[in-house]
Length: 353
Image (cartoon, rainbow, N blue to C red; front, side, top):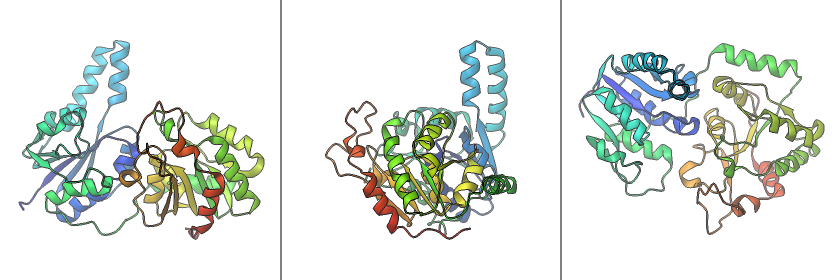
């Protein structure tokens, strides 16, 4: 296998998918220790990626800004933003461009970048016919494999072996100090049980009902198992407050966080409870024992990549389906608070970090 001196990895979003790409990029760093590794991403995930020591550079794709100015008719401003982005993207020629996203947008960005080898997934994993545009294709024989393993297929295509264990992510000291101040000023004592009832804005179909989280929190408090903290993100504070009101003094709202601060908060937790969402993968990356509730999405492909996790799901005939318009949501509604509570009792809580 030829030596690579510069590598561009494309995985734009989302948080969970980016985190499930990290082992493959760590493997690239291990295989090519002297290479310049750049990661092309968008949105808030770029903040935590930029602090990692296995990445030399994060290239920010300003999708939100481009969309905003396009819709408002500010075409000159959009042109300036696009010019600056393309300058950053094209400032070097890469020995290899590795597209771990595999959609039309990532292919377009790959074509705009300068690269000698263009590698992506074959038909088994690619979307939007993206497999037609790669010079080298990473094939798979089984579609239902975990996304970490799928991404590792691409790393192995370049001669990589598995990365050494699940190393923690790096966050700035200010993120940890922010969380320490929050916990101390609110008198939140360990063990902390982090509960995340939410999913991304377009993934409400993956959510267990809020009322059931309230019943579960009530059980936790009656058994005096720990301090329950409700995790929330952008656009979720009002619902988080409603859940807190439903359980009275049984839970506290977490502070507002960016991804690095959320990672620091999860790192202080003894256990995490949530559904199939990016924060669940962030908790697993932080080494927190995870209790994950799966409904319509495929647990084989998307489960937390952690040996210290428990999956609760119902083997109904229509799951996995990813049907956002499902009216019955039998796969989720069949999960009871008592069942989740009993699973929680079996998880060994992590000692305070």
